Length: 346
Ligand SMILES: Nc1ncnc2c1ncn2[C@@H]1O[C@H](COP(=O)(O)OP(=O)(O)OP(=O)(O)O)[C@@H](O)[C@H]1O
Ligand SMILES: [Mg+2]
Picture 1: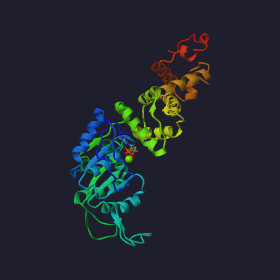
Picture 2 (picture 1 turned 90 degrees about the vertical axis):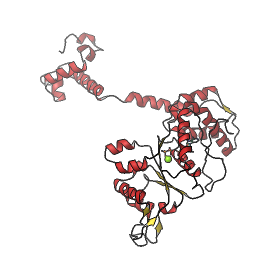
Picture 3 (picture 1 turned 30 degrees about the horizontal axis):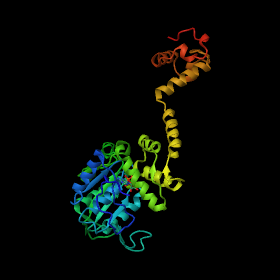
Picture 4 (picture 1 turned 180 degrees about the vertical axis):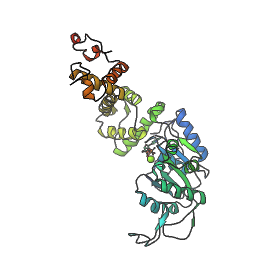
């Protein structure tokens, strides 16, 4: 079932890789802006940088850009820059000649060569080691590669789409990402909004995933009860659309009736989130708690043998000024025993 408002970047016609789902669901203004940019850039050869949190659809958009481009019938080749050790990335990207290192039993063509006339998708580009960043920049500028151990330059005709969930500008400022490569990739950035910022799309996505998993599992779940819909709308979605997709996969599979009444996963997850939130204390709070606990242990004694200052290994006058700064009074130390709280510390 397709919702009437759904945005499709292209028809659901068969593509060479049938596992690709090309329908892109969403119509809220923030999402629509990303779709408009995608539609504008797709038919050109311009490099695109897809930005956004994990699970927001960067890979899906990369595929859509390729499929909407004149390169659609040529290969779309993806490389995950985070999943390979630095020593292997170069050979994966550019290939190697036979015998150039131990284990190189035959010549290997790299991803750039395999993406000739098509598109290369450099996923998780922010994780590329610095040494490889300069080699990649060189290739993007010169539009030619050399296989490891080879001495011929091979011209490449490949469109580049890169993606990251990192803040590359921050990485540039911290010196972990090359500024020149950043500018080379950042020609046409598209930022995909997190799901919590596009709650208006949740119903549409719910319809989409419901029909997807009904078909896949041969089920016939007809809808979602208002309470369950409210759960979807109130959730923070740290894993974005991927999290929602997995939620529906489980819910459709396990739902015993024709309606999903409640997503039980949220009851557990939201509880864990609450515990995590209450657990984090600031350093000042930690210091305050520690000083109060020590004072209690020393029965309120600050200086001298077995006093709090000695235990904390600081000067008694420094401890008194910390007490003042942190607003620790006799009353706060002895709040469960106000009779002891008859002196002032400062
Ligand atoms: N707008 C959308 N409509 C329908 N399905 C979507 C949409 N966006 C993403 N998805 C689905 O959500 C899942 C996650 O998307 P994708 O892998 O593209 O995210 P990502 O941004 O690349 O995540 P990561 O940073 O973790 O690699 C995929 O199964 C994808 O098909
Ligand atoms: Mg991805």
